[in-house]
Image 1 (tube, one colour):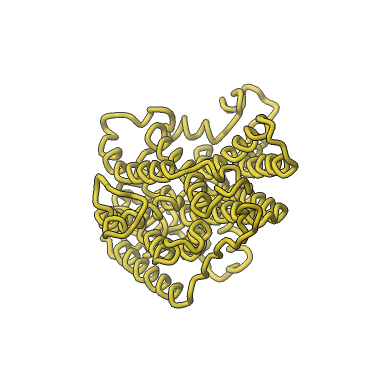
Image 2: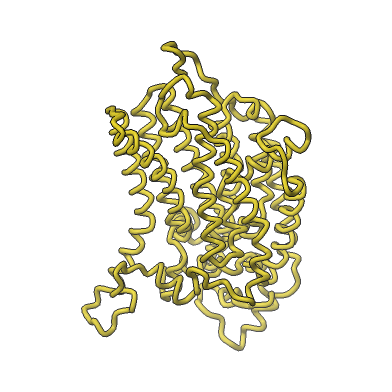
Length: 472
């Protein structure tokens, strides 16, 4: 990699690759953590507070007869203790597609991948297709979580290439923090969080890699990476709709590039970059738009106006927005009720961490490298790091704000697993608190206390998850 310095080109440092012993250590830690959570879940007594999972027990049939429900509840296989909350919906959608309108609140990405695996790898391996679907969902989630753990050090080193941070244990520590993140049982079960996390990390990595390649004046390669990032973020958005927030990266760079063009700082490279980030942003939007078109074609082209669903006649006919509002009570301040105060308290630590780390990143930014192009001698490695951190902070801060104002706030503890910045901030805070040189000088709380809270919350959450108790 090259740096422009007074007309001369000097090499930028390259990132180190993970050593095999580091990978082995992370895999061992990952397995220990998964065994711990799985043991907690399978040892939880009884069928749980809610027995919805028992409706899936009958081999291949959709519902267990009423007289068999109690028997099924007492003899439920261990795997069904993992099929709780959203996992029930995803398992059913994988098996027979979208049937009920409220199911469209759940993205098609995860059940589509599980369905591909089921048809391509495990046909006729199990007599009970529901059991097969659940097993494949569990396997996919754990595989994607492991891939996320192994990808996160590479993402981190893309930002901190050959800096003092990458020379330390930062990449490995950030990956270890992702292993024990408070999503807990949701990264073990047939839920989309792990797949979304992997795709989101991959999208961030490709986008930041595109920025670093700009240092080498390899515009075409950088543009390919940028478009690939948009495509991956689009896939992530089919898994969870909050993947759309990653479009803030493209909007951020498009705005900065357009500002330079409007100020008269014209170049072919900037014109091309504006087009590329625009196309990348559109690829992300397709992850939301295409499922909406599918639903519109199914429900709104019946030719019978009196039988159309209400959302078909809205200005923007989105089944997702309708279902979230009508069935799940999602909307601005809708969750702000007295009865939900305990859930806000449970979510408060995660929201604090997301906001604190975003503020940390935004405070350490500069103007030397803001549109991803080589500009002056001020475009140093430190400036590159600061620009990357600011980009990572933007979608994370937006997620925290939306969770506070309109989401079911408690889900922020599992959604946060897919955003890498706060892991980097947490380890930097621990280093600073231990007397190492770091970006953070003081903290309102001990960062090591945050790690203890992560472990405790994940363990307690796994226990409650197995018993079908909130928070979900």
